[in-house]
Image (cartoon, rainbow, N blue to C red):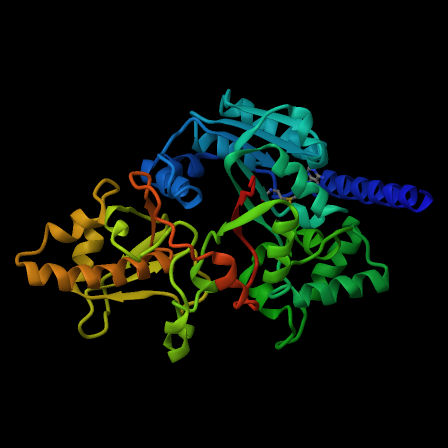
Length: 422
Ligand SMILES: C[S@@+](CC[C@H](N)C(=O)[O-])C[C@H]1O[C@@H](n2cnc3c(N)ncnc32)[C@H](O)[C@@H]1O
């Protein structure tokens, strides 16, 4: 009993420290204009693709109930702006973050947004269930992330989807090393200490483990971002297997990665090794076995581009998803494939896109097989998501967990999870 009590008070201390930290260094940096964001999300195709990323078999709807858990300074306001027909709730323990969100709510007349100063652990107090829970960059800061995830699952509707982002050890190696250095040398989250640290980091020699991070994330030189990375009172990272265990313990099923190509042996350099072709295809509910896939309606994912200059011989375009960090993930496509990509309009199913352009029956059989391989590749490469809501029973029984567990060295930085209410 006593041990339990001490443990409880230790958890409370951590929670308070985390709250004080974000009151002093709110994240992300407070902003007062959402104009660029508003313009981006005015595109209905962007909203549709985003929806079918979470629900590929559910008909599209705009009037969602959405919880942004640990909303920081602007995330809840952004979601309310991007989906005016949705009801958005933002919660955060930091009074500063809540105040910044309230300011944006007023400025943009976001009547569909409510903001509460409330810890995730008490989300049940809202007495509301949500279609979607978004919780990015938060759970790894909780004293008891398992309890936080369970609380969030408790307010997710049975067919709801959760968008999670937690830290991964890969890519944070240099950060943990420096965190340790700061702890041992007594560098604290104070403005003076942070300024000294920024000066020292600016002078790090080439080849230092933090070199890449400092080069690629100039934001890291700002006080708030630096404090968040190096002087946070509480943070942990999850490898892929640890993330799957975390979800399972929380009563959730893995749905998919937000960007799945970097985790897949079907994409990039890894696709070139012969063993890659033995990896099973498909994911939960998305299957290219049988012919149900001909009824999928493809939607181009946001931020995908089709490059048509300086192409290799025989290529009609190169498809890139601008959100991919690594340059080995792209698709070179030929004239027929480009015609199919150009045929994607958010209404036509794959069958229509492919068949409309064929003449003879033998051509049809051959091209349908080519189309099957091609649209599956498009999907693996995060070029498209599918709306399969006109179909039922498309699951081929291939669970994503088994496949991805073999991929243990991937970065676990983003997933959509669905509650396991079975
Ligand atoms: C790194 S920021 C992420 C903000 C936002 N989710 C985003 O991605 O931009 C973490 C946020 O979680 C909040 N937070 C930390 N612990 C929390 C808890 N137990 N309950 C609710 N919010 C919490 C912090 O106050 C902070 O605003």
